[in-house]
Amino acid sequence: MHGVPARPLLPEEIERLQIELVEHMDAAGNMPLDVAHGFLTATAAEEQLGPLLDRVLGALVQDVRLREQLERFRMQLRSDLDRSDYGPLILQVPREDDVTLPLPYGWCQGYMAGVAFLGDHQRDRMLADERASALLAPILSFLMYEEDQWFDPPNLAAHCETAGELADAAIGLYRWRQRTA
Image 1 (cartoon, rainbow, N blue to C red):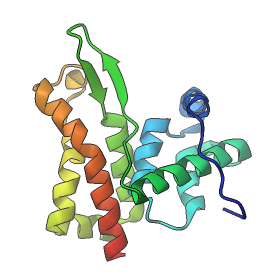
Image 2: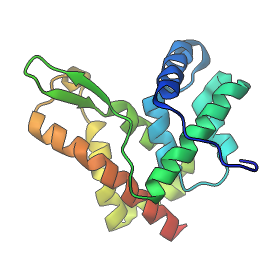
Image 3: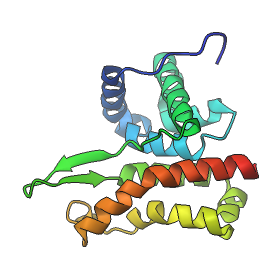
Image 4: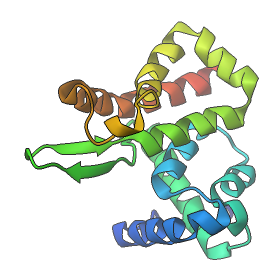
């Protein structure tokens, strides 16, 4: 970014960004915001922002307003990671049993898309490192669900507990990437 740092997105701007990204997904091949958040988290240690935003935006790469909003969005998530005050953007669904079910699948999918974007060498380094691979475990666990388990996980308590580990996993992996870059 140039000059003065951009201000973080306001909650209503984030909501509008999410709606706009979802509206264009089928036609533009862009990521919805929860997937983009995971992707940008996995790639947060990268300095080259252009290729990352191109991947998030798909056919919307020329949309200057969306690009600017995503730059601000990424700046905030990177700041949150630096301060260890980070939380993954995870959809939440209220259930009939008064439990709010976290749906981290999009964020986890985006995170692993970010790892793939970094290339095989970086992925292999993460999987070979005991600390990094342990931090990847909760992320990968949500990608093993069958589609019919998304809204009815086999073990609700373990599901919620593991979803609660994603923030620490993301922060730990961000710090690991910074140390091993």
